[in-house]
Length: 161
Image 1 (cartoon, one colour):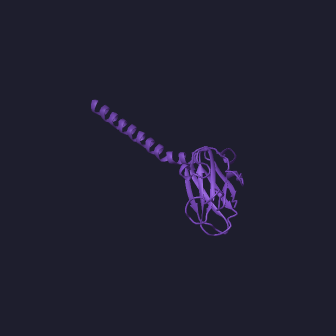
Image 2 (image 1 turned 60 degrees about the vertical axis):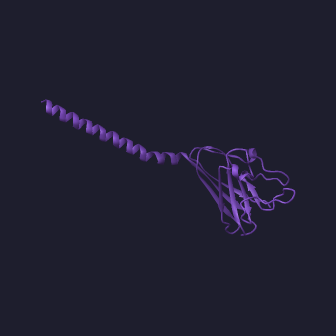
């Protein structure tokens, strides 16, 4: 009787361990799917590109520091080819938060905004919410937008020259 009792216990323990392992594996496999659903995206359509020369540069900022022109302080920076006077940048895997996008038509592909002696832009530029000014830089407060958990936002930026 003792032998049977021990073998049942061993089988019971093996079954419990197998069930526990299956639960851990299922949870681990489901985790990336749940995380992907929690992350959002911002798609930026760029319009008003005056020529097919160069590329579009898009910078995504999470705060006022560095916005709009210090790409080194951006959360993400990407480049897009120009297609028929338009461009497109997509920022994926974003947590919920406040963001602003800065865009330039980088005509000479030097990955920065070219300005004249007085600091006036010599290339096309734009920002999310399209609040640009002739004599001053766009403001974070006017250009930023909220992204909710798992939200896919789409916006259009009109370049100004």
